[in-house]
View 1 (spheres, helix red, strand yellow):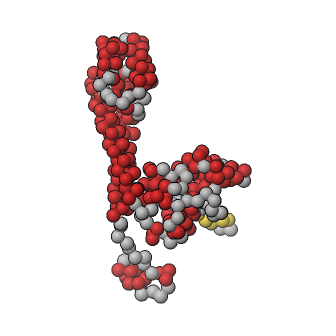
View 2 (cartoon, helix red, strand yellow; view 1 turned 135 degrees about the horizontal axis):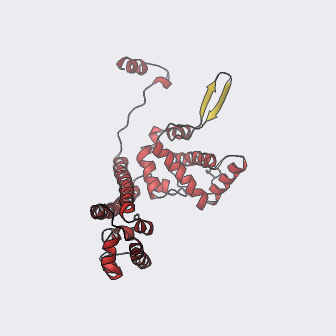
View 3 (spheres, rainbow, N blue to C red; view 1 turned 90 degrees about the horizontal axis):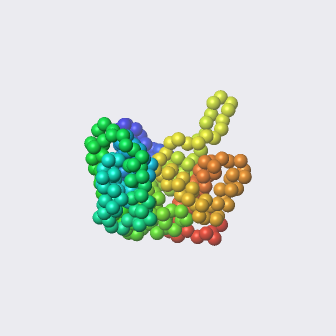
Length: 297
C-alpha cells in the first residue's frame, strides 16, 4: 500500500494523483449524526411494531385487525386493556377513560376504537395460554413505540433546523419533491460537492449510472447495483414524489413511458436527470428555477 501511494504521488499523470481528503464541515457532521440517529429509530420502530402485531395477533386477533399501532391513538389504546377479558371488564366507559388520559388524540379515531375493541372482545371467548404475559409485553412495546414516536418528532425538528443552518439546505429544498427528510439524507450522504466535480461523478456514486456489460462480442448497458443505497433512495423517492406533484417531472416520466420504459426504469431516468439539476444548483449556487432550459424534467 505504501509503495502504491508513493508511485501515484510521484506520477505526472493527473489521473494517477491521489484526491486530497477534506475534513467534514460542522453542518455536514451535524446532519450526518442526526440523520443516522433518525434512521436507527425508524428501523427500531418498524421492528417494535412488527413484534407488537405478532403478539397481539396471538392473543386477540380481532383487536389487531381493528387497531393501527403506527398511529398515536392506536399506540395509546394498546397501553391499556389488551386481552378480550380485560376489554370486556373495562367496557366502553373504561376504554374512553383510558383514552382521555392522552392529549392530542383525534376524537373520530377514539370513537371508532372504543366501539370496535368491545365488539372484538365479545366475539372472542377463548382464553389463550400466556395471554396475560403477552398483553403485558404488548403494553410495554406500545409505551416504547410512543416514546420513540415523540423522539422522532423532536429529531425532525432538529434536522429541520440543521438544514436551515446548512449552506446548501435552501438550495436543495428548492427542488420540487425534496422535502426535509430527503434533503437531510442527501446532505448527510453526499458530504459536499468537492467529492463530485461533475454530475457524471455523482450519478454512479448514487447507483444511477448504467454499467456497460460485455461478454465476447456482446455488449449492453445494465442497471447498476453498486453505489450508495441511501443516495439512490433519495433520488428515486424524490422522483416518485415529483411525478405526483410536479407537472414538468410528470411530463418527463410520461415521455419515458411512451418510449417503452417500464415504471421503475422511467423513475430511474428521472432520478438521473435530477442528479444533473442538483449538481448544477450547487455548482452555480442558485435555487431551482422551473423556467431554466436545462431543468430535470
